[in-house]
Image 1: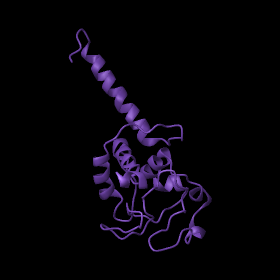
Image 2: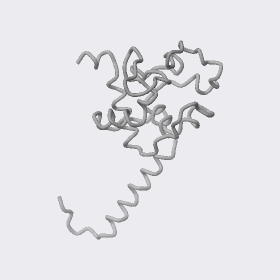
Image 3: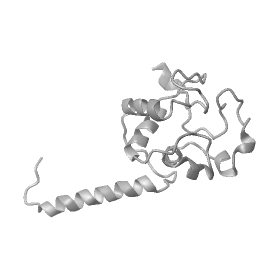
Length: 158
């Protein structure tokens, strides 16, 4: 729908404001009051395979048909506490002595997942052992988190 009697400079200002808001969201930590916007689950699954599946399974038994399962399964990750799930073939907390205090206390809320995917080292409070520098694009992270919400027993049954 075309807006009438709107000066073209207002379109430019609105576009600049939207870009500034996106840049702010891409570069700041989100707190747990942040609400996950709508995303595309199908796109999120494809992006998970591109960015995450090299090391993380999406299955409850931890099998990884794409990569090496070096990291914990992302099945049922939403709301889980870090360190509760086995890492690859290791038992849960087997590598606990290498985790710093901050990474032991992460509850994987939507905001925590968004922050971690943006900058894993910053979120965990130190270096991570993943070959993953992070994803800056907000919508990419939103779509992946929306996909992660489907990795539950309830969603598997449907």
